Structures are given as structure tokens and as C-alpha cells.
Amino acid sequence: KRPGWQDPRWIHLLGPVEVPGGPAESAAQAALDLDAPTTEGAKARDAAVLAHFEAAADAATRRDPSPFESWLLDRVIDLADGRPVIDAACGAGHVAGELATRGAVVSGSDVSPAMVEKARQAYPSVDFETRDLRRLMRPAGADGWGVTLAFGVLDLFAESELVDVLTALTRPLTQTGYAVLTCTVGPDVVTGDGPVRVHHDPAVVLAAARRVGLTDLEWFRHGAEGDGPETLCLFARRPCVSGPGPRGC
Image 1 (tube, rainbow, N blue to C red):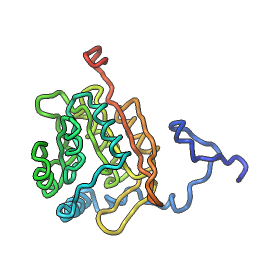
Image 2 (image 1 turned 45 degrees about the horizontal axis):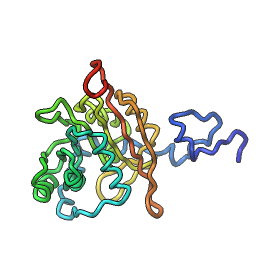
Image 3 (image 1 turned 45 degrees about the vertical axis):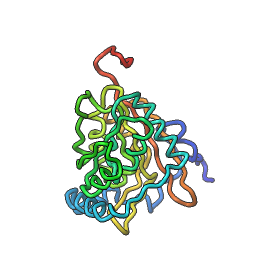
């Protein structure tokens, strides 16, 4: 250990802190282009993402949720407290379908028409629509969503887009509603089959959540089986701005 070095492994438990004299950023991390998904422009990235998921729709299959995933879904239902839930990047609808079987009032949306069609066939009792999550709307007949979900989709966006994406997920929430997000822990950039993906630094994601006005941030890192990367899980509440109300604002 160098003089002044501090072990960073547990520092995330303290929240965002600065560590003077902490370990220097590696040369590999410093060289990462965390805006790589939009190197050729956001429209080109959007087209590549759409083409990828349109092609993947036929192969999308359901599996039983793991114990951790089951806990996460139950937590979403608790946070919703009877209010409507939207899976804003629902894919083939398996998360929304599982939430519905557990009693949630849930809808799903996805940018891929093929994925949405597969979701409708698999879960006919759930409302699905084709929509980019950045243009998410409020539910019909309610003042907002109780929970907006975005599981894994942040990986498809550049670091510089995080604030805009989180704004889009926060805007249609009812007051005291929650955004529930997961993304792969980085920093890293992954290329290969399919769209370029960014594994985001948790501190950057948390800073973006605070910047858009989300409060009561609760987050943790969930380890993957084997040598896979960790997943950041974030629960964040939209604050009440209109005074006392039936939900304790």
C-alpha cells in the first residue's frame, strides 16, 4: 500500500464521498469513451438498438425469477402501494407479466414493436404499447405512475445522456412515486454483438438521480454469479411539492 492509500471496497456504504489520496484512476479507465454509444450520433444508436431488439424478439423466452429478482419485484409492489406501475423498457413483457400475477396494476412499453407484440401475446391481460422511454406519458385515469421501472436499459445510453433519461422516467411519476433502476456497474464500455453498452459508475448514476430531483435514494450493488459484473440497483423517490395530502406529502 502507498502512503495515504485507503481501501475503497466498502466506501459506497457511506454514500458519495471524496477520498483524498485515494487510489488513482487507472489508465484504462481514463481512456474509456463513456459516450461511445453516440459516437455516430444518437439517431444512429437508436436505430441500432431498435434493429437489435426487433431481431431478438423471437428468441426472448421467459424464465422463473431468481430469489433476488423475486424480492425486487415484491419491493416494487410495496413501493407502488396500489398505484400503477410502468415497465418502461419491457421487452417481451416478462417482468410486467410477473408483476401482474403478484397483483400489481402494471403496464409495459418498449421501443421495439416486435417485442411489444410478443408481450401482448404472452400477457393479454396487461396493457403494452410501443413507446420510447424518453417520451414516457402519464397513465390514463391517474395523476402519474406509482413506480417507473428501467431494468438494465441505462446500459444502452451514454454517460452524458443519463440526466435526460432519468428526467424522462421521473417526469410522469405521481408525487412520492418511485423510479426503480438497474444497470451494470462500471465504468466500462462493452462492444461486440449488438449495440455498444456502457457499464456506468454508480457515483455518476446517483449524481444524475439527485440532479433531476429524486430523493431518498436507496441503492446497493448486487453481485453476479461467477465472474460477471455487479448490478447497481437504485430506488429513488420523487418528492412532494404541493403540501399535505393523503399519502403523507
